Amino acid sequence: MINILFDIIVKLLIILFLFSSCSDDDSDDTVFSYFEQFRIKSLSSTAEFLFVFNRDTNTSRTEIYSMDRNGEGVTRIAYTEEHHFIMGVDPVRRYLVCSRSEEDTNDNGELDDWDRRSLWIIDLITKNEVRLTDLENHC
Image (tube, rainbow, N blue to C red):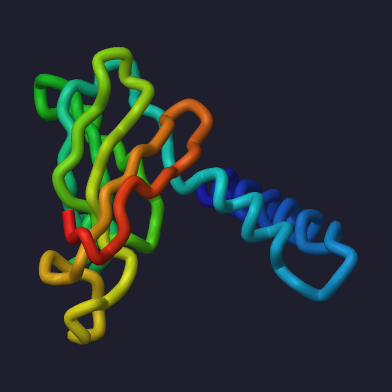
């Protein structure tokens, strides 16, 4: 088991190196772009409930999760640095609507329930994220 994990880690490091060396300048834009596409995962075919939780962030910042009707198959959907709030998904399970905080507007040093938020729509297929409101609207 340890050998398999080691092999996976080595392969990921090689991929990181290859992507970082593809850039013509000294920036890390290529690596960031590569990992940015993994910010949002698609819903599994068994997912029936969406919720926000901070179980993987080790902060008050919450991410979006899904699970099946039996409370199993808990899957993290969002891998971001934002704090997510109430959301919904369309009937064909392509679009997710959520409100989220991106800035520490209450100056307590972290993203949490007391920060101003904006409304977003996320395409779970293309992974495009579009802001629908600005922070001044505080949705």
